[in-house]
Image (cartoon, rainbow, N blue to C red; front, side, top):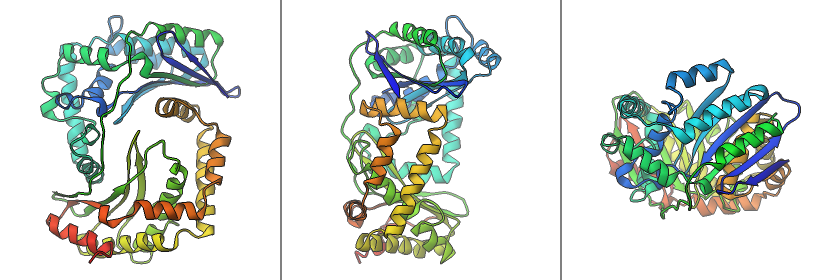
Length: 421
């Protein structure tokens, strides 16, 4: 069972003791990501995530790296559309030392102009690396296009144009304005002393700022996106409107995705790969945000198999919308999800993520028993109703990356897959 403490400045500290382990995982979760950025500052949240590792008034970047290695600590960070997380995992005996370093990085980074110039090149390389990964291009470009015109549709990494003018003053101003105590959650899970918990609370009681960040509206619109690339395969991503993280059907959505395209027993895998041999990889996944989401199907294959594969994907989805899941499918996927969730929560890192993400996004952390009950409550009728609600081919989108035809060709493929012509 976890405990929650709200510090005088609004920072929330969630702690969960696990007696049989020696490690502790801690995350600093901030309700700020690319979705909160002004358009002209696209990518600044991710850039700040990089720069927080580059030194403080007390410690150089090398000092930080050596000090963390000296305690055997594992530390890193990530930025998403709606949050940023800085995290640490170490033994309970080194927790105070590790958190002293991590809090110093978080609260007192220098954002030195010389370091910014060097790290800007690193982020440019990260952007190029993403462009060289066609699976990422297909999935991300589809999402960006379907939510174009909103901050949710902008890339997390930003662009060369938005990153180029950023300097120390820019980063410091953004940090002061968008890293707010009331949007900050400290989550720790594992073995820790009362002294260590009090030390963490004291560190973050000093975090300045007030107010809360607000998101702008985002609305899904169907799109056809084509990105020619000189590669062997064509990477396809088909998208539909999805659900928000708050939606009451979120458990049913996981069942829907699992039955359709999660694993070798899924309908898409069995039909497109096993029975017809058209591809190596095919899967479905759901992306959920604070107020909206997207449901997608991805595959990669040779150009000669492309039309047939899209036709079969459409057939699988339409047949599911007609008959829904079988009882055996639903029970099998229910057990898969419950098992994966419960086994994952045996890790202090996973439990810390569970605490931080749920508190930040929902203001509430469901216990494992509640999650199990949520999965157990999903019915065949609920999954069928959700499929009919989401898998509407008049609202379908597609992105093709590789040896592509034009947009009209893929629009026609999508209409045929949905039985619309």
